Length: 405
Ligand SMILES: *Cc1c(COP(=O)(O)O)cnc(C)c1O
Image (tube, rainbow, N blue to C red; front, side, top):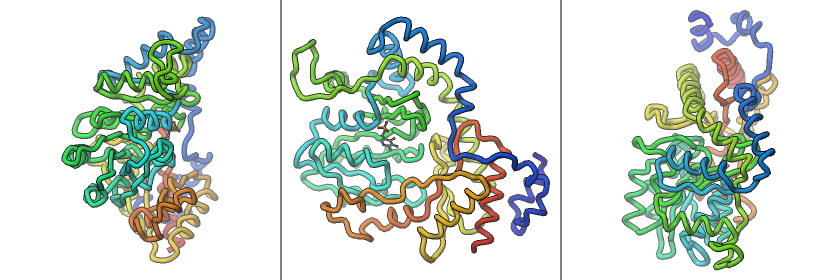
């Protein structure tokens, strides 16, 4: 796309569609918030062949494919051990169990995350304690952690939300000072780094999801745990397999939470592309940042400068002084009318969910989380998103925001 056209898109006052005829004409297809079809075209043959081999082998659970994926993933993250499991949710549950977090304990985490982060804390019998977030990174506000620590606090679960790493240097200092475990929720941040180290290698345990929309996605459910502690690794292996070390001898209550051979094989193939896909996501985020900066009424996500985030989502905030939620939904609806798909992660923060009414968090108790939940829109983000598609997103957003101001 020519420079002159690009300039006209992002210059103030160029919101008349007739002034951008060329771009308008090129708007031939709608742009989804996320899609997997192109990735499948890229590596589908390789995956198909590998899956057929597994099918022919008759070895569907465990075996070489699972072991070699676990080894490769441990090496990629930079830890001694990787333990495959059934999902990111199971990974969090197993991590809490292995660290003996249970009834009477409290675990500090964010309320602006997918439900599983808190759900698993409750599932082991512990209590989630929600701390407010930073409005730019959407991650835990580390300035507020210490005030939330009590005699019952056992662990912190930092969530590297949307692919942005939490400041793990500072978080580990806080955790060590108070002797708390750190379980990293890396479900949205596979491949992200903090100070040159991959997330999932910094806390005691890293938890990963291979749900298809994550940066490294399986063709079904899957998850993994990473740790540098061989004793924890052994405990996690036991818990994911019904609490047995020796077949049919059960030492404790565990789970059936296996990563199956077909998914492990697919993940092994996809892992080779992950850095390349993440680099595309980073380039897309940088382009969004440049093109959206001049548009008034938007707050763009922080964290671009470090170059270490992996942008599972590119999430902007639309700010209006009145009826935040309604305005955001209007903007999304108008974008949808122009064929542009968006998503809202997350519309209702966890401390305000019906299931957690009993914890007693009133409206206004986590003001940043609550404000942000009414303002966020995640724009189309996947490695194959083209520059032209991005220009269409930016142009439409500019038009919608200017007209509804
Ligand atoms: C996806 C996700 C999970 C859960 O992973 P599943 O594989 O879907 O069980 C946990 N935490 C966060 C932040 C997630 O995005």
